[in-house]
Length: 288
Ligand SMILES: Nc1ncnc2c1ncn2[C@@H]1O[C@H](COP(=O)(O)OP(=O)(O)OP(=O)(O)O)[C@@H](O)[C@H]1O
Ligand SMILES: [Mg+2]
Image (cartoon, rainbow, N blue to C red; front, side):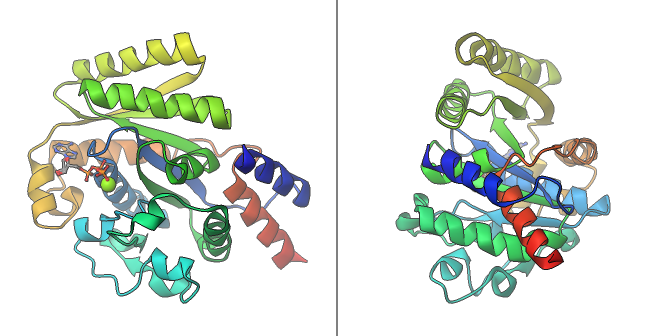
């Protein structure tokens, strides 16, 4: 609720016609381990191959592992930025396809719940750093903690990853419920990962869609399905993106297809997110 009111306060501060800002896509899930980090890493890389400048924020702040997945070795992380000793410009790393990665720390329980002042630091750092990017992908981590809901609700698009496991569906439903009831989110994009067939993917989506429509009155959109693919864990073990190591693998093809779709997603006409508003505010200040 406080976040909503801050967002409204920012609305008062800035004009609604702004410079071009990155499209902000938060990748979330209710249950852990469904594949968010792989989605972010591979879709990010696929988007760079389509000519997009991509920034990935590892917002699984206390348990980040995007850097491990990509074989990157960060010297500093977002923890240092929140401590005030570093800026995003100083911690950013280059990943495959020249994707830019802001790495998180691991094993820092205090960061699993972001305070409001930490949220402000992240927004202000993004305002300074992310302006030149086309797309900002945020790996939010799993669950319904405030750090997940903060990023999911302040992005332009909340992309929720589900796997065919029933627990993944119930936990995704719980996340959608929190985002719709507490943050008044009405639209969610759903990605089914680890489906054994396209039919299984559409059945998984169908179950979630029926429940969300009937009980939460929100609109879900199935944006894609990534097949279960043994090449993914093989690449993970080698600390490389599957798209980099096995570009023709079924999962890699699905990540490329999703990236081609994402570049077609319309940018919101009005800035929905508090992050967009911060960018517009900084763009306005720069322009003045
Ligand atoms: N399409 C897929 N096919 C096969 N295995 C997959 C697929 N996607 C992910 N995995 C496997 O699932 C595991 C979890 O993936 P990942 O770390 O991306 O999940 P996550 O949602 O980010 O987890 P966490 O919630 O812990 O951050 C990995 O070991 C990966 O190999
Ligand atoms: Mg992860």
